[in-house]
Image (cartoon, rainbow, N blue to C red; front, side):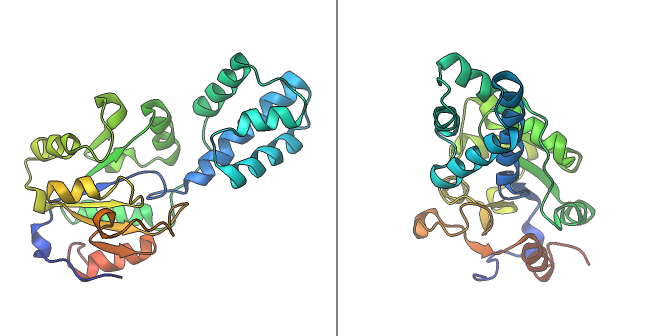
Length: 238
């Protein structure tokens, strides 16, 4: 773990969370979505559901999500037409996710609330997909405000996001603590805006290092370590 917080613990009034790979494992959402697509392909094209799912997981692990459906369809000698790909993408995005929060997330959110702090969540990408994730995870109730940047036509690390948050919560930048996992976008905007930042090294980007300019002020390895850190800094009440 990196250094302790520079500012007095009582200066923190708002904790701002990212969603994917910060509060739950995004790989579980991918697997859930691919399972829904495999089920559809079994009915629509007669594929073996298990074989189709395993093929998609294989391509996901090798090359990420970009061309999973094209590669899988070609592997099973099915023409990956634009219409079919669009259908599969829609199924993937609209399926009911089978996901759960990381261990310790609910107690942490509850303790932050009971400590008198405001909580907000900021998440990028398709807002409808993100809303379904939140519904499946059952944690929306903990947040005083949920910001789907897609609805604002913005994307982290745009400073406009943070300025809107400061205005909405009537807080100063130094009173905001931002928690995320992705050094490509979660910290540089928040730090530039004047917030303090903590990176949780978990999920698919846990080993990604982009240099000091894009790193958080502090780093932990898990939700439990984050909770312990906040308790030691007296941001969490005992």
